Amino acid sequence: FVPAINNLALITAANKEYDKALTIFSDVLNYYPDDAETHYNIACMYSRLNRVDESIEWLKKAIDKGYSNWESIKSDSDLENIRDTDAYKELVKGH
Image (cartoon, rainbow, N blue to C red):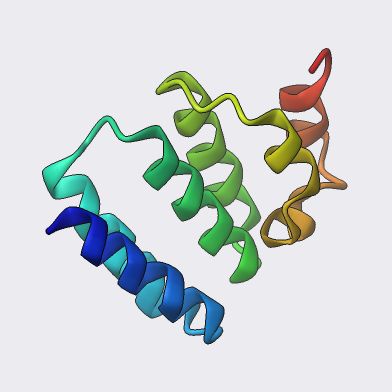
């Protein structure tokens, strides 16, 4: 059930419906509140919506929950809107 919802959110995001995808990813957290990848995807959606502070907050949560795909964090185009921030640079420093 949850993988299907997660896939729906990814498809929705691919269609540039970021607000809708954000809602769907948030619903996934109702079932898996500690899922690091979902936290990461929420950070990505906030970045796409240019909601920088929220994106950084959710990226921190993702890392705290165990998200460790630093290559993705550094190269994912979804996070492009936050890369120039001091908070982002601090998060990726040393990785």
